[in-house]
Image 1 (cartoon, rainbow, N blue to C red):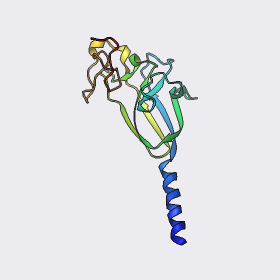
Image 2: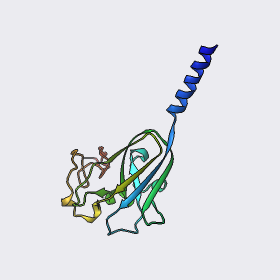
Image 3: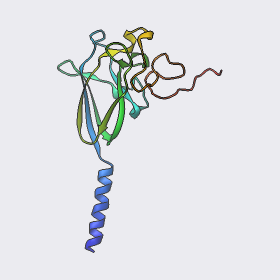
Image 4: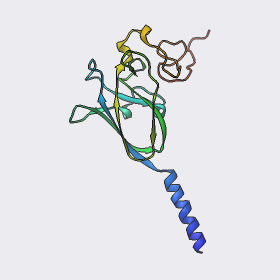
Length: 157
């Protein structure tokens, strides 16, 4: 009987641990000064890279920083970027070059502090270069601006 109770306790604990969910807070410590009042959103593989997901919108806190809070986030690794609501207004490096997606791992209640160096729409298209990984960037044919995945063109060739 004692072995059955121990086994049952182990199974219950494993199920609880496997379904653990956490609170995640993301704070934008700094953004470029050109668009201080624009709406800000988090996008990533967790929301199929939807750039204007209302559930992922930042709000300004009492200090004027943009903050996004998420509840019941499953433990996992995620790729994310900050956007002003479109794929053309995705974050980039201070010189306008595309950057790789941020990789975050959630395994406890967590606060991330991010700095956005630039916005892709503030730079001419010819200044946007592939990120370090070689992933395609804005203007690359048949690819999404920040998706790091191939997009099927809508026009047949």
